[in-house]
Length: 101
Image (spheres, helix red, strand yellow):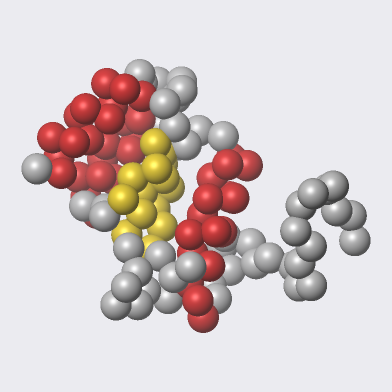
């Protein structure tokens, strides 16, 4: 097993984001989270961590798709990359806030 200095060591491998786990099932305290992130590695990290904590996670790779998903799924929380290739993150954040109201 290879580790990064200072990183926690896990005894078991993390499930891939596509693999359902018992802890990825929605619970009464789970949130619906929308991740808007264009970098695949960051998508995987966020999706894995959030699902492991029981949240329902939707992922968009572009600002345009993020707006569509936000309107469709009405997430409780949005994790937004401010440096998207197709949208200014600050402007997108303002638009997303109008959907929430």
